[in-house]
Image (cartoon, rainbow, N blue to C red):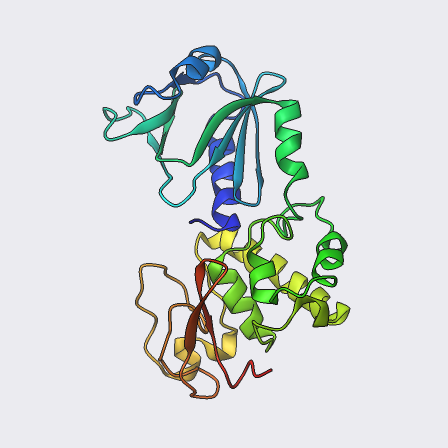
Length: 269
């Protein structure tokens, strides 16, 4: 499932290509046809992201709410758009660009009130200017749940996924199984600031890199990471491989329905 930086990047890409234009809106697959007919030729006025939720604003108060889920993908390109292939739920086309949405978990036309309801059920997003990290800490500091699980709870923090949770906990030497209530405010503030910076870098470069300059392949004289995920990381998808810092084998276990990765030495309880 894409992490929050990917959705913010998509919001930017949709805005760059379509904001201020009145694109053709269609649903080649047919599952969004009625809503597409209502939006066809209407001006796209805004794009926005909150965590893993993308919003495309049309006219004054019509919003397409998109959640990619596990299988959703967006393809963007220049016109002429190719014939729709596969299950294109939503296609936007203007004089210069097209965008095809395939396989989303959610693609729904909602009002501004419906959009606010989505925002209300989400935690603060490190990539949003209106984020309130104190709201997240209030929930974390009262919880017995493992901090690694809390970081993945979108009601606590929106946009953090499996990669960022594993990597930020490693960067701050925090045992992923530590109860949230044992996390100090200073630790939380450092985690939040790091998430803001890492995720902003993710938006800029469209990939996740979490290793510090002194731990890059060039600096350490090690081969670069080869993985479909891309980016240089400390622990994510490195089970049984030696930790870049201490050499201990990276461990993995299931937590919050996803595979957790951590170094038992660098992140000792």
